[in-house]
Amino acid sequence: MSISQISAKEFRIRLAALENPEQKFAEDDLQKIKIQSVQFILVLREVYGEVLDRKKVWERITNGLPVAAAKSMGKIDKFIAEMLAYVHANANAVVGNDTLKALVDELKYESKEYQRLFIRYCVEYRMLIALAAREDVENLKSLQAQTGSNDVEVLSTGEIVARRAK
Image (cartoon, rainbow, N blue to C red; front, side):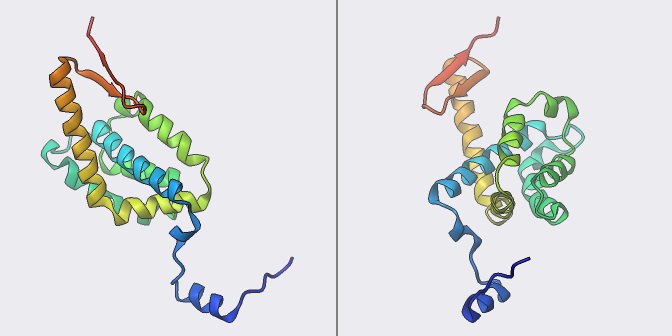
């Protein structure tokens, strides 16, 4: 077993927890985390339990993030599971949510450091993430009204796809 040598300055920085973990990630990774965190909040809104007061959806989600993070011990699957439990997610809504499945698959293959950064980001910026998610919901409602379809999707290319009910 080899012991790596670090300078006294680096040791003090690590000991004082002054090292900024975000500095290890490229700007593209941080941007990706921002997008994923908004997607996660939107998914939680979609699977939000019927036993809870729907008027408090944003409050419940934002309050749950630090609770789930504390229980997760930095593990992404535990964090997601705790959040689903916190919002009393409907099992049928969870298993039928393709966005959640894709997000879980995406996050579980990221590095442990990336996963921990995602969790920290969700906790630290939870109000701003909720604000962005709510804006996305309002934009989608506007598109649904304009197209006359409840099944509207905005693709990553910016193209809007509206499906008509049969």
